[in-house]
Image (cartoon, rainbow, N blue to C red; front, side, top):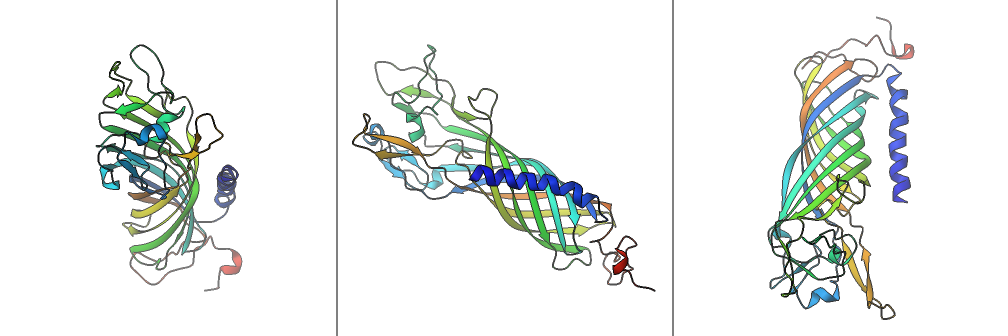
Length: 326
């Protein structure tokens, strides 16, 4: 269902572009830098794999992380703001409403300074290999003894609707709602890996999970994106304006923090006593955009008022039934 909805939104966006550009609507181009940060995942209670329970001091249900001697909290996860970029074609419906078609790349990173065990290490999602070439895919118990680092990037295809309550003058605040699709790649690495078995201690490869990178076993993950925010344009000339906005987005993916989320379900009839089930969590991110807007074409949906003024003349591109005799 999620794939169908995501694909439908993207197709609708692509089909709408030539229809709106063919008319006499005002046309703007926005180029912006972005700063994006992981905020949180939808809270889901996580049950650790039985092999991990004797080794851990508990489970933090808000993060799915399995603790060592001290149960970790959300503060143990440090998430950074990283820079990205986006470009958007904005089409005026009226002088107060614009639709936009955005393509961009958001980047996020973070560290786990108290490394420990995660349920996905008991699945085939665990990708570490030792120096002898053996691959561990959840069949052994592993200890993470060094800090973890994740790097995630999102290739976005988003449709935006902006409402400008006060479109006159230099300062033009707006409300924005968004919907679209993101193609996500991520990589989780570790400084140091060792086996818990004292008889065999090997250094493992740095990458313990990846998706959509050149060495990853699978390509980018497609995810539905919904969001909203506030912002403004500050008109410098008739065609150039400064732009800034802040928004929150809900991404239907559980790998934005570098790891997939799994839950252990007891099953007495199973040879292993149970099975791992993916949680498919939803992730909230915050985003700041800053850049410039250039008016490519003025037309219907564009007030011809002078900057900072209150009077105007009618645009010659208005439909004939909108024009009045002078």
